[in-house]
Length: 137
Image 1 (cartoon, rainbow, N blue to C red):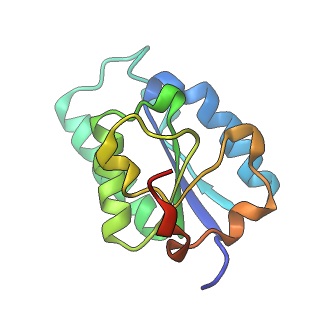
Image 2 (cartoon, rainbow, N blue to C red; image 1 turned 90 degrees about the horizontal axis):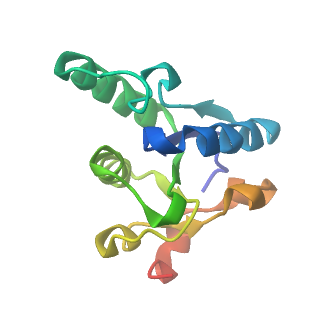
């Protein structure tokens, strides 16, 4: 399987600071990195239904262009939107990386590797769906 070249960062808006650290680390590896719309941080702005629908559709298109997703899951948390994104990524055959072990048991079945943000390094490029044999980490 080819190396990961493009990755989409999935994150609750409450973790955008951590997402930006992950973005920088992945870009330092020369990867193409797609991110959430940081300007639609629900901690600071109200996102109405039409905006949320468009943001979701646009974000799923980013995942479709990626080889993998990197989920920022501080404290193991992944909200409803992130869960949808993970399910979509798995359905598309993408590699699923989490920054921390997910608290949600069902998500644990979908994780290919747990890579803490501070440990992002060149090895992240070679994680594959086949590495998922030990997903219940």
